[in-house]
Length: 267
Picture 1 (cartoon, helix red, strand yellow):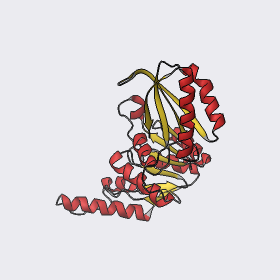
Picture 2 (picture 1 turned 45 degrees about the vertical axis):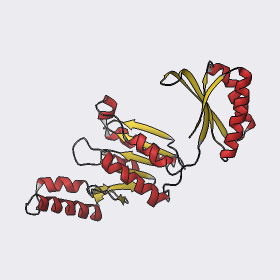
Picture 3 (picture 1 turned 60 degrees about the vertical axis):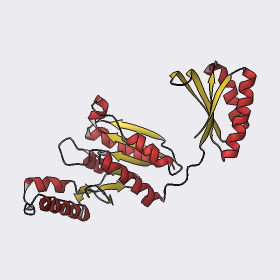
Picture 4 (picture 1 turned 30 degrees about the vertical axis):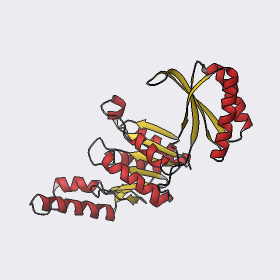
């Protein structure tokens, strides 16, 4: 199944912060034999977020949406999700019970009395438990302020310490994807003295000869070990035996072209 990622936040588009979610989701998926198909950054704008979410649902992909589910004025994700799904926002009893539980625990830790329901701060916290109708909760092991799912789109906080274990929970609980021993996914060689234009006919010939195999080329101008080089390899395919056969054919073609193979990589 295809997996996608949407990260909400002006701070990413302005460069104030670097995204930590895509690298982690790629890692979580790789541990489960899956890959990230696409990723998208969207500013803190309710209409823009709703548009991105409509496209996510229409795709049928499994999508993680990170950030903006809090209760400050620049958090629009809950409202955008309801708008995009065409459902109302409503108090989620379990989500709000978890918020109450967290608030009471924080008060005890500080030696304070439990918060009163009418306190402005408590009312703002409870807003995080107002979710689109039909939402399913995603447990938050860090502070119990839950995320939520609507269909195959899963909403988690922007904080990596919360979001990343919640992503893992969704993969395991919703889709039965648990970490497993890493299998070989691609095989490649590092070349020097070759240009991508020279390699294209060979790449096309390998893909034509091995059904399901994809050939990739990754050039580098300043590789820390090989300097100017090209990593050329094979991925996908039915199994690793097919990838090995395709790489062997690729190596033969490279020798015929006079390319210098420096090393072989297995991932």
